[in-house]
Image (tube, rainbow, N blue to C red; front, top):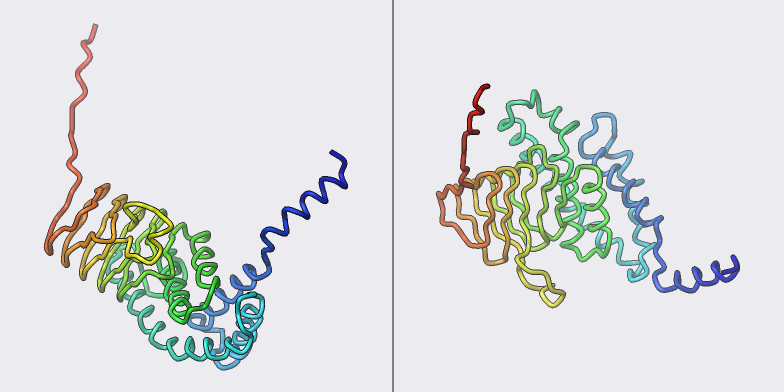
Length: 264
């Protein structure tokens, strides 16, 4: 095929999905700047908030489905919720420090813990999700996913404090509900029991009540599945049904000794 025909074919097919990748890169810059405003000692809140608002306006203007004047109301609602988000994130950071013996300070948690960064981006993106901001919350969450290996859908409902240790491979679905004082370790999935496009507006993911600990590698599926308060879910457990409060659920291990080899 001649090069001009290849180019024409690409152009023709490209028209099916005109994607603005500048929107994604701008959203990633916005997410980083927002995180610095909330936590970096050398980043002034007052001096940088106007620049952040301008960046948000630029992002909003790149979304074809958005009316330009609407960005002001969404931005104002986001700012109103920001102090509460920061209060919750401070509780999250303190919880991580208090429950992880490897953590030497809250500052270490904020600077170095992928679980904290993923939770922070979730809480910020969730605020935009609540205000019907299209596309941007999902790009924010996927940015955190790429950096941390932790996939939290911005539509999930998560209380405070929330604890994710190590975090790699954690997946929390869109309609998951997590109450307060919940601790989750790496490889945990709160997912859907089945996937179908017509289930979009139904609760597909589990509910985890207060003071639950879920250890590494456990998979909990289904919108009707409820993990009762004060329960402990052991590592590598597979659950598709509810458990009552104060439960302990463990994967049973079978240990067999190797047979001895006769010495010649």
